[in-house]
Structures are given as C-alpha cells and as structure tokens.
Picture 1: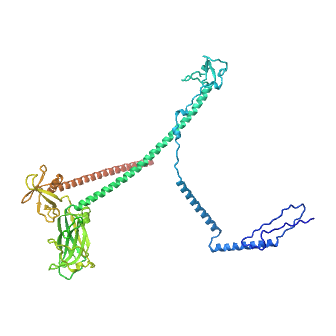
Picture 2: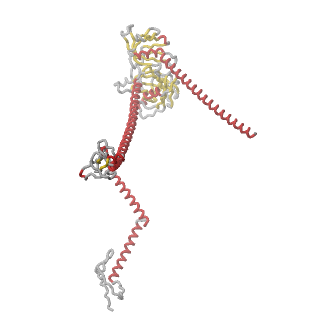
Picture 3: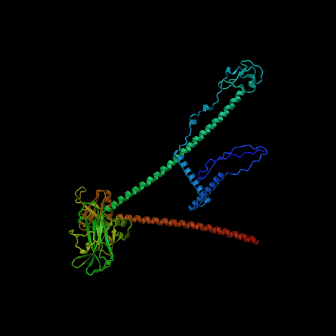
Length: 592
C-alpha cells in the first residue's frame, strides 16, 4: 500500500526571528481526501513548532503574573470590586446621558400647536346630502313598473324618479304610500328614498359628532380662559395686597417721621429731677458735691456759636457735705423747651472758695428719652410721664458755661486728662407733661377793645402745677425764652370768658384783664377750653361714661352666662329626674 506523504509545514517566521510578545504563526496545510481503508499516521510537531509554542506559553505566563502583581500593588478588590466599579460607572454614565437628553429637549422645546382648520371649514352644507338629478347619460328609463313589474308608458299615469331611471305606476305608488312629491317637485323611488335617508342619517350623525367636538373644544377653551382669568385675578389680588401693605408701611413711616419731627420741634414744659449718685470716690477736700445740668442745643442745622448753644444751666447740690452717696436738693422746671438738646451732667466738688474739683461728666441726647417718656413712660401723679436715665461718668468733653455771662466755668487741671478714669454714675428723671391740660403756642393780646385793632404777639404756655393744682399762663416775648415776661394765675374757671361770636378770650386776673385771641378758630377754642378746665372735664366725663358702659356690658355678659348655666343645670336635673323615675319603675316592675 502506497504511503501518503505528510503535509508540508511552512513557518511564517524564520527560526532566527525573536518572539517578543506573543508569537503567532500560520501553517499552510495541503488538504487531501483519504481513501477508504487508508491509515493516517499520527503527526508530531516539528522541533521549530515546539520551540515557538514553548516561548509563547512562557511569555503569556510572565505577563499574567506581572499583571496580577500590579493589580495587587494597586490595592484592587478583585473581581467583585471591578464589577461594582464597572456598574457604578455605567450608572453614572446613564445619569449624565439622561441629563444631557433632558437639557437638549428643554432647549429644543416647541409648544404644541393645535390645528384649528377644522373650525374654519365647518359649515352645515358640508353635511347636507344633495341628490344628483337623473340624466340620460345614465341610460334609458325602465319600461316596467318598479313595484308591480308590469309594463308602463310615459304619461300622466306614471311617476318618473328624479334620481335614477325607475318608473312607477301612479296607482302602485298610491297603494304603497310613496306617491307624495317633495317640496321642490321631485319624486324619489322607494330604493332611492331608502338610500338617501340612510346617507342623511349618517351625515347627521357625523354632524352631531362634529358639533359635539366643537362644543367640547369651546367648553375646554372657556374653562382654560376662566382658569387663566382666575390665576391672573389671584396674582393681581396678591400683588394688590402686597402693594397696599407696602403703601401702609410707607404711610406708617411717613406718619412716624412727621410725628417725631412734630414731637421734637414742639415746645413743651419738662422737669428734670436728679435722684441720686453712687460710686464717686471720696475726696480729702471739704466741699459740697455739685451737679451742673446744662442744656445744649444739638440741632446742627442751626448755625449758632458754641456759647449760644448752651440754652440753660441749673446747679444742684447734694444734701450733706462731702457725701459720696446721697440725694440732691431740688428739681428744676423748664417752662418751654423742645426736644432737640443734649443734657450735660457735670459733677464737681465745690469748696468754700467757689473752686470746682472735676469728678466726671455724662452727656446724653435726651431726644429719644423724652420720646420714650411720652410714649412709654409711667405716669407720676398729675405731673406727667417719667423716664429714668442713668449714665456713667466720663472725662470732660464740653465745658459748662455760666448762665449770666456765657463764660466757661473754671475747673481744676484733672478735667483735661482724657485717659483718667472717673468712676461713678448719676441717675436723673425726666418728666414730660401731657397736652390734656398743658398747651404751648402763639397767642395774641388785644391792646384795644376793637377786634381788628393793635395786637401784641406772645409765646404762651399753659401749665398746671403738681403741688397746688392751680393753672398758670406764662407769657414769653419769643419762642424758646426761659424767663417769662408775665405770669397769670387761673384759680377758677369763672376767670375765663370765651366770646365765640366776637372771637376773643377774656381772662381776668388780680391786677388787670387780658383780651386774648388767635387767628385760627380751632386754636382759639382749644385755648379757651384748656384755660377754663372744660377740656379735662370733658375727657374725664368721657372716660367715666366709657367705664360705666364697659361695666354694664360685663354685668350683662355675666347675667347671660348665669342664665345659660341655670338652663344647663335645669336640663341636667331633669335628666337625672327621668333617670331616677326610670329606676323606680324598674324597681316596681321587679317587685311586681
């Protein structure tokens, strides 16, 4: 048996070539078909192939080991860690893709438009069935009756269909109740009648659906319009409410500013009452502690000299010589002053020679304190509302001046030391008087009996003293003066006579009679009522009646509550009686 030669092997690389990474090669194998019974000998790889395969296996093993070492050195968690990282990366990528897609849809969004052409094209004629008249082009007419199928000839005894070529005897049409002609003179045969009626029914249904669609569309449009109107109305009401709220706040701020300006610029009487002082270190020198209360004009809009800004000054002395804790000797009443001033409290130790040893100074802007005393202060008898001010002593800032010659008061050398500490504090009370029985303003005095004659203008202050309760009318030459020119005591309301028709106030004093008037009718009436005391009487009477009415309302409410409680008690007693009667009946039944 002939021996089959082994297939030639041709390597793709020469034996001298060096396999660096992974050696791949191709084997050119000659294909042959073995014959029946032929034995194919087992082929073994050639030495060259064995060398190539060994080198490939060694290279793959080395790279796998190196990769595993590198992975372990990086601290990888292994297969499950890699799978989790891959899954997490896929989720992050999916979320980013979704965001990009939503962003693109948002940027490329176009509102959906509604095709309203069907609304414009709607008409009743669109759903109207129109018959096509018969034409000879459709063919000749029938020669026999469509009902009885007997022959018929054209004439008065036959009916011709206006739509098709059917012919019917008039007698047959009357028997079948189909001889009636239409209003336009046309006649339809029964078949055409059925066909046309069916078509009209279908078109009527279509027309009804179209009308329903139109109704739904306009209903939805009406609802949408109403909703938009309601939304706009809600927005408008919200905006209107906010605007009204802002306007109210603006009006409130304006009224507050106006009230504050009127309050600070309005002249009224005040009283300063030093209460006590504490913490002042004792001195080796003999003397009396003195408190110089200076009133300093802080309205910088007025161009005044430094000496002219010192409006007034009053000295208070402590009760007891060389006492480091004690009370002051008096209080000070200022008949007419506005709120635009600083209160300068300079404390000194005054010896027998009149020299002052500086002990400290406290400066306070009393504008806010006086406002607080009017709005929130506690009432102190008939004097007015009181606010207490406590200030710590500090180095000298403003040198007090003498009341008579406006010269600076000489203090010792320690007053000029800015770094020196002055322990201690001073407490004073500011008392403001109510405008119910106090009034200040301009008033005119009639110098002759003629109303339109010569007049003298006064700055007047009506004030009620706290101790005696008597009213005094102070007349000043000008606004802001501290010393009155005339002082009129009003002991009784009979001294004041108000001639409303003539327009003057007659005020009788011990030595003379004053004829006072004012250009404003309301101001003139206000002056007369406050001078006579009727203003306060009217207020007190109103307060008394209000309290009586409030007390009556409270009593009526208590009576109603008592009646309701009595009704509830009677109802509860009735229920308890019914329950007891029921128990008695049950007990009687049990005994029976």
